[in-house]
Image (tube, rainbow, N blue to C red; front, top):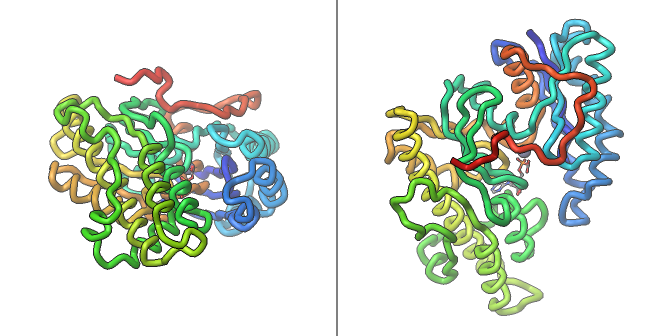
Amino acid sequence: MKILGIETSCDETAAAIVDEDGRVLANLVLSQLEEHRAFGGVVPEIAARAHVEHLHTLIQAAMEDAAVRFDQLDGVAATCGPGLIGGVMVGMVAGKAIAAAHDVPFIAVNHLEGHALTARLTDNIAFPYLLFLVSGGHTQILVAEGVDQYRLWGTTIDDAAGECFDKAAKLMGLPYPGGPNVQKIAAECADEAAARARYPLPRPLIEKNKQDLTALDFSFSGLKTAVRTHVENMPGADDLNRGDIAALACAFQVAVADIMADRARRSLQRFKAEYGVDNPALVIAGGVAANTAIRARLTEECAAHNARMVAPPLNLCSDNAAMIAWAGLERLRAGLSDGLDFKARPRWPLDRGAIKT
Ligand code: KG4
Ligand code: ZN
């Protein structure tokens, strides 16, 4: 079984082909970083136009890379939400057109399910598992119980983790995209303890009753505000000292890692109790999962709780189409496909009940 996947929900135009053995036959990602850099963030209209401009050549190139003809495809999967609706429609319509022309099933994929199922593509993880989805738009703790079956245990009450990285980076005068640049400059800080002492930062909700295993929400806006205050108090507002910024970036990263570790502890304990699994897997997905400090901290926390941390390789953590093709394949195998009248969804929670339990 070979599935073409298409991803256009944000600022990456991507096309990939995977097969049922989990082989990624082609995986092309065209980043629009340059188009958006001048604006310090993703501009929806520019993103949609860039998808229109590049998608067809990218799909063609992916098919050539995989040495697969369109009539050899068993299905076409496209991200149909959540995301920037103009871009989502470009990929969705392209996917429907190819599926219709070659008379194969069309699979409407939730971008978040793409992230959620990546660990099954890369590490063959069995259900149920615990999932930390941390990206620019989402910060969620979910239990993946099966294809199309998720339980939402925690989410952010304000900013997403990646958004917080991006906003903090901007405040620190670091270029877009924020996350990788915070990590890069933080690596220049040689003394983490001194950086933490010099730039104290809050860990919102971390003190909330430590025994309450259902206290799994996040809040990042207070952390961002504290970064702003530290930057404003730095000498030479127009020409910030690189060493100061490196120390602040380091302290910031540690704060986010501490918050994640606290939620990992609570959710692992809860998962073990509710699912009776002694050696659970905690999967991290989304762009922020690329952060090495956060990965290291979560690995420690998992080890302390007899759990395995599973982190897909970096190129499959950030937005890509292999995860969409794979999610499409899993859905098709489970007997799920969609009509050509499927409507793009700007908002599309993974947990359909969306009731936090
Ligand atoms: O999953 P993703 O590629 O796109 C979506 O939001 O769906 O995630 C992008 C986010 C951005 O906010 C970016 O700053 C953040 O992930 N990010 C990072 C790192 N790499 C990307 N944040 C922290 N450290 C990183 N190394
Ligand atoms: Zn994403």
